Image 1: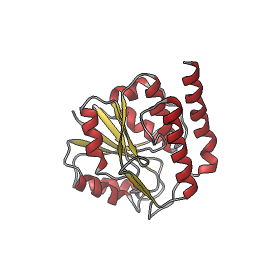
Image 2: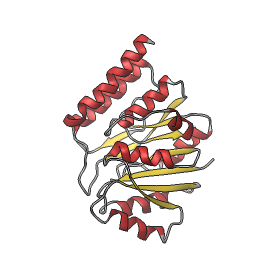
Image 3: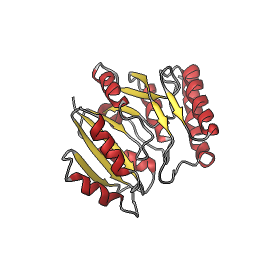
Image 4: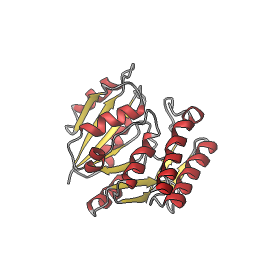
Length: 232
């Protein structure tokens, strides 16, 4: 089984080289590294092209959909050819070493493996306390209310079998895509699990995550999931 790592990147020239170097240094798996250039206006793409000379497993693709995190993720997920795929943030917030444990779970038969900050051995370092409370509440409450086997539904750091991506119509426009895919997979009967991971706040560049602006989109999928559970 082969893996693809998809990194959506919009104006990440300060981080992208370090992300790639960390991935290449941390993993001894057989994988493709796909950088999705999301309409960047800085040197993000140039930095990746320079890295391609040193790492033959890197591919860079230009997102031809409308600019935005969800569309960049969707573009990358749709174009990978491997049996498994994991999106990784371009701001160094994800713990790359978790990927090996995720991949073991996929190989053992799971369809979706969620990196969870809110279980034993998981952690969330830095960032807004309000965002932390929000994501923790959403994750734990959905786990209790609908029975989805993860406590961190909002985390973008999840690994999927390609079969899952092929069966789901992605409609999200922003970061809520991280909830949409696993929730739809859950109701389609795919096998889901979680592993602990440690998340840390970015130290370079500017985050595009605006919680209060994005709250309605998260709330839509939150209420949809509860309604679907109730109505069957």
